[in-house]
Image (tube, rainbow, N blue to C red):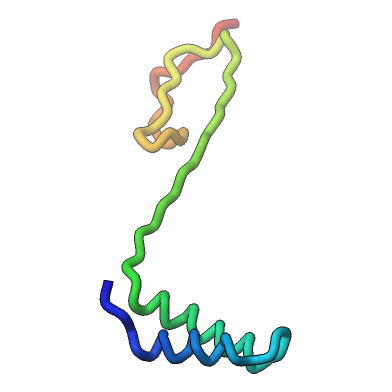
Length: 79
């Protein structure tokens, strides 16, 4: 990765500022914004879905995303 002079300047500036000050906090907020501008973004979503169903429910098929979005024409409940 190539260095970024603006980011380097912000990080050096933050090192020299007094801990706990509003100025230091702002410097590191600016550094974080700069990092978000220069780095690629990859969204990662992981979802665990647990569904329970009574044994008397038959032919229920969830949609391709795991949700109950498909037509329930074939689903039936045993009496």
